[in-house]
Length: 495
Ligand code: FRU
Image 1 (spheres, rainbow, N blue to C red):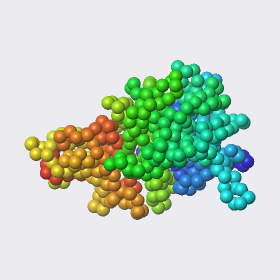
Image 2 (image 1 turned 90 degrees about the vertical axis):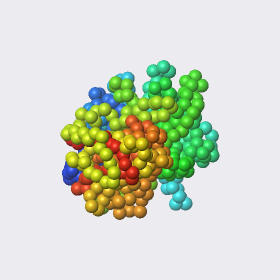
Image 3 (image 1 turned 135 degrees about the vertical axis):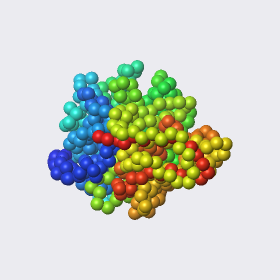
Image 4 (image 1 turned 135 degrees about the horizontal axis):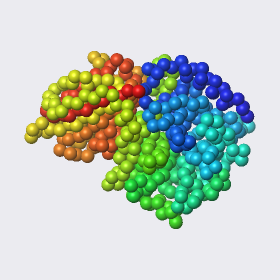
């Protein structure tokens, strides 16, 4: 195989990555060194630093020839770029080093577990494609693929499982069972997705345990990028189901990300599902992965894009694809809450507070503007009457804006980027049904140049979307149909 592919990628990203000025990127949201980025991979804490890898095509801003890009951070907010970690340079991964995860082995090595995609052209011209699970060992900078790869093959799956759709291993060490477990996405005989569980004593030799849950053609087709962990007394399974049907205001993105709460029975190795819900209600969110921090927090990072919105590259951009802000997870009343990691607060600069502002029609507030901000807005009715609608416009000038509108009558929150400057025919608005609280709503906006993440009611829901609005559109306005009272707390985010 081509042993130089990694060296080539490292040379290319060093040459071209350095030509992208910091102002052309978000302040904190992760972007590829150069080219294309999709899923977060190998999110782990190794030798005193957080490591984040990503699905990476350095050579252009479209998905192709998957490598693993690599970054490290001390606080999950400021990331330092490292050279690409893996290239598709072995026969068993010649068509891509697909998504996977990482952990620290007892001997101190960093282990990466990923999906190798192998393609072979048949005599009749058709291409056979096969996905297997592979590993690599490293020191946090350089990684060697295991000489006995692959370590898990589709032949180890229950009968009828797809050999082409079997990917995205998430590995962890289970102290109670004293073994490694890994979950993977698979496609069962009914053509729809499932999460399969494997175990191993040494992370090299694996055996199939069970199928934790499956779509049965109810929740989309292939299930990608599973993750599985206990949290606040509940067991949580995360999946990214492809080709889902919408239900009410849920699951409108085709390829969605969902979480399943339930109970893990470690003796039977089964998972009993209680609920399945959407993880995000915005336009750009897919394939998240979590990590347990040394101080015991479960932190999630998602790809702030999705397979469907991954074709909306603005002109002249030298990078494409961003990660979400890392989010701390918790469970309350069976629901997953997401909040920006507390480390972000260290980067809060100047604060502007405006309390009890009476809003009727449109107004702007002094110094409440910007494209790198952490802003919390509480809206409530003024006096006895409920307002009809409340709208916050961000990334605004005379030409552009993105609107977030709450209608307390229907309890629907709408995100609309139709006028944000996209020049492609892409979906621009999304609605979420939020918990009704007599016209009161709390919205925290994390705006970082090319995106907005809106955390609703302390993270009960999140709407995540990219915005490629010119940076000088930095006004923020508030407007009510009827009248409302708001409190605004806005920090500039600074590096
Ligand atoms: C999810 C996904 C994964 C796969 C990777 C390939 O976005 O399709 O299932 O491993 O991307 O880049």
